[in-house]
Length: 195
Image (cartoon, rainbow, N blue to C red):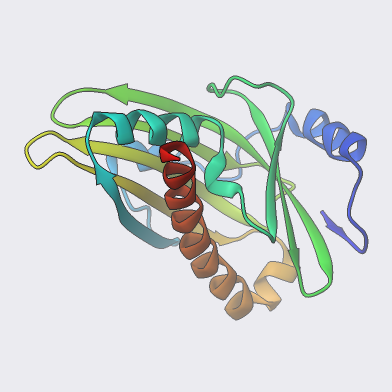
């Protein structure tokens, strides 16, 4: 949904509710869980080391669960429920080129594993009112063999609406910028917790 002015919290909540009953806009739901790359989609994979140790991993897990990876100046994630779980519909509000773009997604899965590495992941997939079609996974990993903690973003996407098709080079730049800003937001969440 493209808007000329920023929607109110109530408008965003109404939008989230209106999208809750729709199906995903792609057929390979859950593909990011096994790092599958469906044909016809652009794949983006980004990683950053957040530090070392279980304490950093626990902070990073909570940050992903709380959607802190969206805490920067041109994008916001909105949700009705405070618990992140499969089936939860969320709204992602982006501000670019003077427009507000409100996108709908649904949580596909939440993973918490301890073998072969400790990992916590949340993935969401796009709904009809999203400029793109695809899935994105936000994952933190703790590798006990070297004690490193990583934040990992894996996404596949393609344009879903006419405007995103027409402005695709710009959309790709914003997707790359999102990865940079999201990694920094996670670093900031770790730094804030260590104060």
